[in-house]
Length: 219
Ligand code: SF4
Image 1 (cartoon, rainbow, N blue to C red):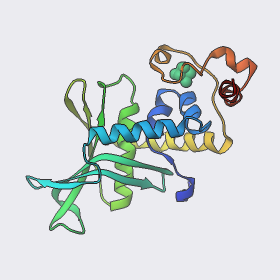
Image 2: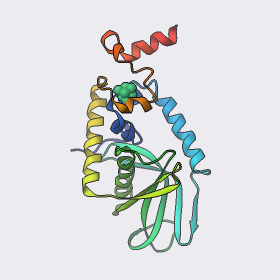
Image 3: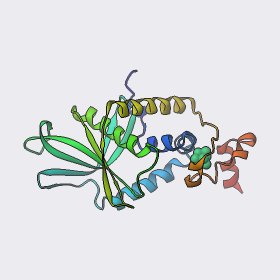
Image 4: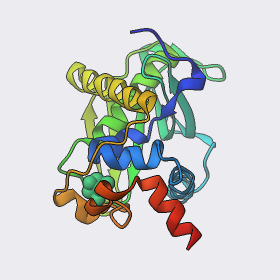
């Protein structure tokens, strides 16, 4: 599989939408009317979560970098890590302004609690793949911090999880290239879907979501 150009990159955070519901992802990232809103909301959440993004600080030998932009040309994904911790490790890589060698651990902050599906985990693993590609190092662990339960859950970055991320990114690009919005498959997840008010099953047989939205905006 050839590498993707930066201009063909998709949003890394879309992985969690895609794994939650492929149609929801397409409504946000292909139909696009929603992408700006979602990115704005995500940006605000990031700001709230990490109080002072783009800041780096060092505590007890660990360097914390907040709001770090990441990219993978293998995945064709671009995103922002909430926090990346750089831990001293002799097997690590040199960093511009620091002495010694470091290995990164991405930490993603979530409002809720751990989900039954793997959407949060795969988003984190995608960040790890980006960091490995950018820094040319091995990222063996990441963490998810859930505000609702105030707990940090460590995730091992396994080969199997990485393969799932590669497969998910490949399918996201396939859908995006074809501008394909999958049809409705309702389930329990629809109850917590923020787009359920526009994703009505009866819409499908009558008109596309984009024409529905244009009509709604015109009314
Ligand atoms: S309402 Fe259900 S099928 Fe429609 S986008 Fe949301 S989760 Fe997917």
